[in-house]
Each structure stands twice: as C-alpha cells, then as structure tokens.
Length: 138
Image 1 (cartoon, rainbow, N blue to C red):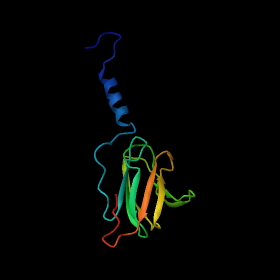
Image 2 (image 1 turned 90 degrees about the horizontal axis):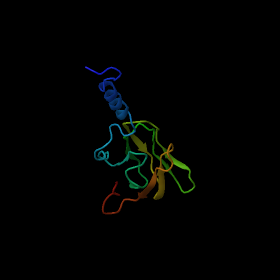
Image 3 (image 1 turned 120 degrees about the vertical axis):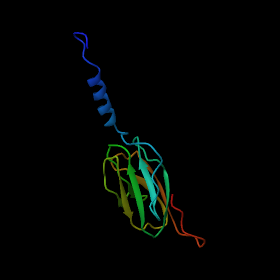
Image 4 (image 1 turned 45 degrees about the vertical axis):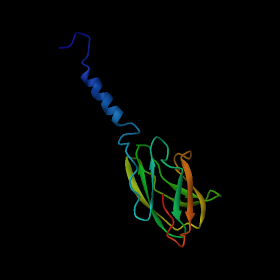
C-alpha cells in the first residue's frame, strides 16, 4: 500500500528500463563478428569504428561485413586521396549488419569513413597478393 501523495516506484522503474534499452548502445557488446570468407569486418559502436586500419586484396572484389551496434545511422565509404568515392555502402541504423560487396581497388592506401559521422574514419590498404599467398584481410 502506498502513502497518500506518494506514487508507486514500479512504473518509474519500468519507464527507466524502457528508455535505457532504447539508448545508442542497445544490443552492443561482445567481440566483432567473423569476417566473411575472403573479406573483412568493421564494427561501429559509440560513434566510432572498432579499427582504424584494414588490409584488403588489391585488384579483387571482396565482401565487407559492417556491423552497426547502435541506433545511430552509419555506413562505410572508401575514398581516394582526392576524396573521390570509390565505394559507398548503404547507411542504416542498428543494431543491424550488412555485407557490402566492394569492387576491386588498385594497389594503394585509401581512407574509409562514415558519411553521417565523418570523424569516424580509418585507412584501408589494398595490397597485391604475394607469390607466397594472398593478401591477408583484417
């Protein structure tokens, strides 16, 4: 029984739980997912990518698994030194993931970024396969 003029605490607690679950890190946590065969993976969480460098095969298409662990919309775009887009991935909110099919990149170093949050960025290095094996993706 509640005292006169005092409301029960249960509805307040329920509201706090619902609001907390709708925050930007709902569904977050855990290790990044495994990269698809022959591909790479990037995770977005707390308005940041989980890595600032990727290595990809030069002159070969590859899958890029992008996991958005927050409700904020993100994507992955790859640009050259002149800031020309070489690849633009779909922008989407999360928690969700997409596997982008990235076309062949010439050997070199490029920048990747989120178009919605340009401060989220990193470097992608497209390497030719060595005669001893293929370029490692990570």
